[in-house]
Image (cartoon, rainbow, N blue to C red; front, side, top):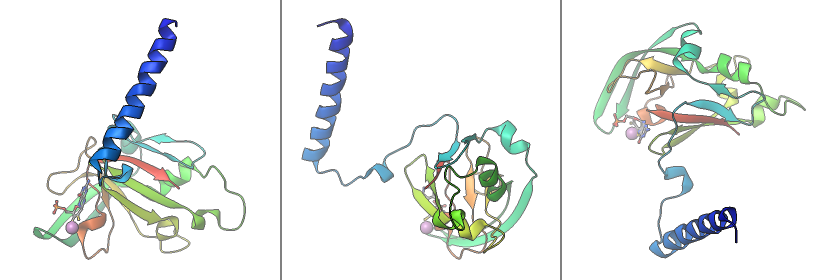
Length: 174
Ligand SMILES: Nc1nc2c(c(=O)[nH]1)N[C@H]1C(S)=C(S)[C@@H](COP(=O)(O)O)O[C@H]1N2
Ligand SMILES: [Mo]
């Protein structure tokens, strides 16, 4: 065996062993709940052109401010957030397959936090032709405060804070 062969064998063993350990431990955690490591937040998935949601990219978009108030397990929270609208970003990314009738309406967005928390939104909620909700990627406001390194989803109108994903790791179009 060459060195490369050995490396491949070692990797295969590691992967297989990891799987076995998980299976035996009967881990309840699903992939969706695992922590997500990411330096740069990417808007990707079934898009034509993935977009890196860097500070420069977000600063290049109009700043949008939104006042929200919602219930959380720790009581009522109200805050003014500032960030970039999500819809124009989706439009720049485009759909990988925009064929057929109303292609956006068969797509969803999965917004994943670094802790593995996941929230889905429908394109139809954001598209101005339909619900046209001003969902933003906030980089200011809230507690702990949103920042360019701690982006937060803000869904205006929600009664509960469950969809305000904090510390976003990635956004995937499905
Ligand atoms: N990344 C991440 N964001 C999250 C959550 C979470 O568990 N992880 N919880 C959500 C819920 S259920 C609420 S009510 C709001 C406020 O959560 P807090 O009670 O931790 O402030 O954050 C939301 N965003
Ligand atoms: Mo919550």
